[in-house]
Length: 95
Length: 192
Image (cartoon, rainbow over the protein chains, first blue to last red):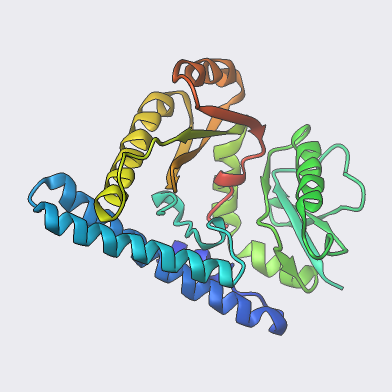
């Protein structure tokens, strides 16, 4: 938890003009983290081999749309993929 | 006046790059600039910072600071770094005598489109990333890999004396695999 706190706190700028940008980055970082976890779980299920073709197609389409939306948002706020990458110390880069 | 943190070093460097100075914070040495470096930030700024970091690397172990790490004054800088002294010392110990090497592997997306193809591409990328780590991890001190679109991007922390072996191993991986570096340990300076 200490690492998470550090990973997050470095993203918030003290300069009031940059607070909004910092907040957007924080929120998008968390959304991206969740998106990645969801995707990873979904891929594991596919690899598990218990899904029908139709289920895989539906799951894939959902993941693809999520990915596209996330890219749009990220570009809208002018962040790189690296900017939304959460460093968790000993756990390594999660994304 | 705003201070910009350029790097955290293990000791004072023999020679300080132009327009920088050192601030001691416990057992750490912060290398700072009194002026914010260039705004808006462009590729030139990045290369200039990289040159400073590489200058420092000649005489001391460094952790490059994340771009735009600023403090209002020395007091704030001390608070910022002081609170994380132990973990920064650990990171310095990790990267001592090492450089970063970046490796990129293209992923051939499978035929087709839509949801199945998206999943298939992701699975291929994951498999490639695992394969890459399997080959190169034994030759490195630390590593991280992620997939970005149709490409696996990995960073390895490699000890100076294993750099040649590492490069040879990358070459054995075959066509399309690109390798850049040695770089300062940008990917291993965290948690930043």
